[in-house]
Image (cartoon, rainbow, N blue to C red):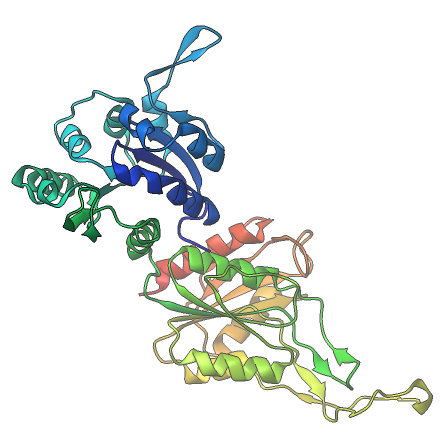
Length: 401
């Protein structure tokens, strides 16, 4: 999941030749799950058409304070437009626009919207090398940075004048990367590695049959998406499931408990936070048939042996990791969860009960109690698993140093 997913982004375009690159900026934002609206200066229309930008953004494009509708002027509310955005990108930002922003010269809709906005503002300058190097422009850039605005660096190369030097607007991919990395830097799990196990395991009886359970993996996948949204590098070790994870998540698939054990142990030492949400089988067949067992062979029993306990081993190996387990109980729920918390050296355990209506295997909702190592328990109401994941991480972050 991109840090830009779900963001409402306002793109401001001023009148420079680099405006021809802005349709690709809109497309890149949209591909990452952002909603985009565009506001332009009147001169920007000479370089890129509102129709192109409207088609790509699926929103009207704004360039004047009023718009004619059925022969009547309609006010384009720059205040509402500025308040709508989670993030405001001005690209390209010409010398004229930089000056107007610094001096609050409200002579077009873009600058009026900028002055009304309260969200983070990113500015991608674009001009000829001598204009960019001019002390007046450098002072304007310095003042904008001093106001907390994020002025992006410029590129170096051939310019519209035919000269070669600094002043080019960064390429669309570079702009998106800069914004993404800047947003990630402010997230609570930026630079952290989170390991999550999810889903069931299938323990083979023969090449056709297996011992499994009803786990869908939905809770573990929701936790992985939330950890990713919080800026972590997420390693998801998943048992068999039809679920898809965001491309930003490092996913490894396992079938059996043995495969899941090997993958979890491989990644655990470099992990900062580990959450064992998988429903790992406790037992597996002692002998696995090399061929399909025929019905006429009258199989009367399957001899079982314990699987390797992934969570217990992580608890034994734990050094600075924050380790969270899950407990699905049907009786004496809290006491059984606390026993598991202590016996496996966990920092916290998430308890859910099969007795709770609307919670459990394969459902989209869950009802959990978060219990930490000093046995402080916080219970949450039934809610979607994505919201449960937010609750769990809010508890982890309040305790994890």
